[in-house]
Figure 1 (cartoon, one colour):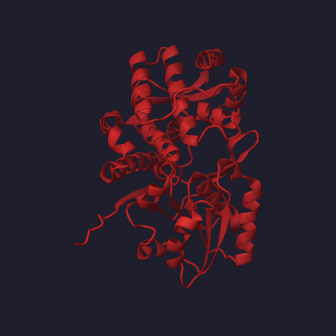
Figure 2 (cartoon, rainbow, N blue to C red):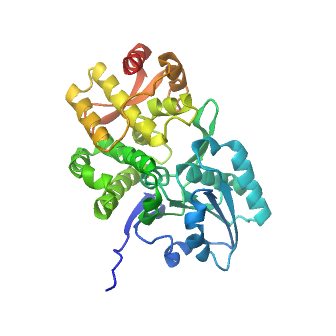
Figure 3 (cartoon, rainbow, N blue to C red):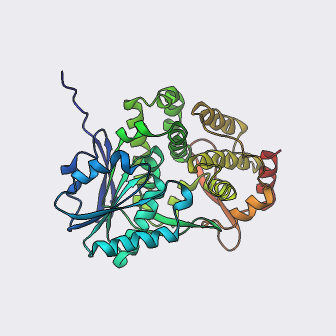
Length: 366
């Protein structure tokens, strides 16, 4: 008896006269007819890493037959999202003889997608790229919306460009090989979307936490699609983060500081976001914006999904605050954070009192 593969979900990211599809489903890397049409020229560079390439590069390579293509592999990990590796990726494009109609294919998680997109934005002032995310976190967040970039020792994602992909190919079969810790880190970004602006989705996540932990196919596809649909709507209204799109950074100012303080070795990005969201909720509560019940509800959901909720020991409140001052959302030398008035009601708050932030950090590290 043959099993029918369900038709992939398609969500369009509409940006004026431009748009691109996000395909979510099974078997998509091998569905060459679907994504090959997004490649216009005869050159392609696949950027991946040493963990993902042995598992999935062959499937992608079969769809590149007839093109002049090569691959460039990073070592795995956030610390490799660097200018040095962008330089190597650009050299790989040069060796390929890539012209302005070339395409970069990003096969991997958020590090690969960010670096590949930034490299594509730089080559000849911008060539096409396709996102093929292989982690839950990159499927629901970093592959959609066109943010690309690299890290500096001073902070995460301080250098980058807005450069939209031609398509996003989210093949959930790749999640079968994803380590448990990385899978759960991706769930943090799913929670974030619900916490920002979708209380009904938040309640759905509370109800389906066990199914998501078990990686059940139908709830997983539903969760990815709902998060992507929400983000696509925000990006369509505010592509370059002049206003509403900043809401998508709930938990990120705290989280990026935690990641940087740990030199990108202590916390995964999603883990930093989980802790950061809880710190943002605690700060909102301290400032009288939200109720303790909202904080407790977020805490319970994060714990139900196996996510960390405490700041790693040994970090210093003052050092974390100094890193938060480097956040890109800050204006005129004052902290500008994403806080909330309860589940599904996030907002941008400028001029946040640093003493309140420090008090939250000190309480978290007691």
